[in-house]
Image (cartoon, rainbow, N blue to C red):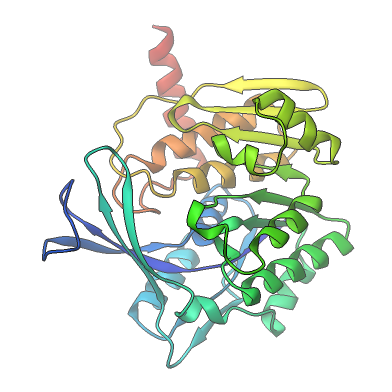
Length: 317
């Protein structure tokens, strides 16, 4: 199978236990949980049996080793994760609001995650890569943008493909160099995976189908729009394919989009039909929200297929 590589931040998440809890006062917390959008993505891909590796950096501390061991146990290639003595692994503290929104306190740019680079191990990983995946969250500094550019160029030079999940928070859009980086990545993208309104960051059109046509006219071969619990829609030159989501009890939404993207990219690389790739991806996204912690709902292919079979059988009875 084709090898999938991603680059970006690794961190731990520590979460408020109670809905409506604020960090402006002491309160109970739970964690640490392995996290970071690229790490979640690679972990889910590896659990589905896809050859997958991550270029990243962590501190030589418990949080860093927690992440590395989780990725190793799930079958990911960790050879290009650099461990830095004297630097702390990134962190994200999370509260959950009564309206379903989340509030984050991050330490990423100033953590070991900000020391990511294309070193000897990263070059070796890229030399065997068939596909490079980019996440907008990972374009948080000139250094991380340079890593993404290098990864894209290395894989494209070998005839490989690129996928792009913008995953952009509004406050990031004014970061130095980010807008130029986003448009560079988009110009190299084969598979585009925006969530809902993210599509319109890059398009002049204000309706979905017209905006997708703009993307396809730019040379992007496939656009998949993630719609959360409502499922996802796939577009290519052959037309439109919609796939509904699965009904589950949501415990924690963090990481669901990353799990969806990992599954879709993995099955796209395997040449699966849009219907199959969307169904597996929706199953992974649904399972991801059923446990507290960004990686705790990640499941193997066998577990995802069993969940889908049960869900679909229940829907038809």
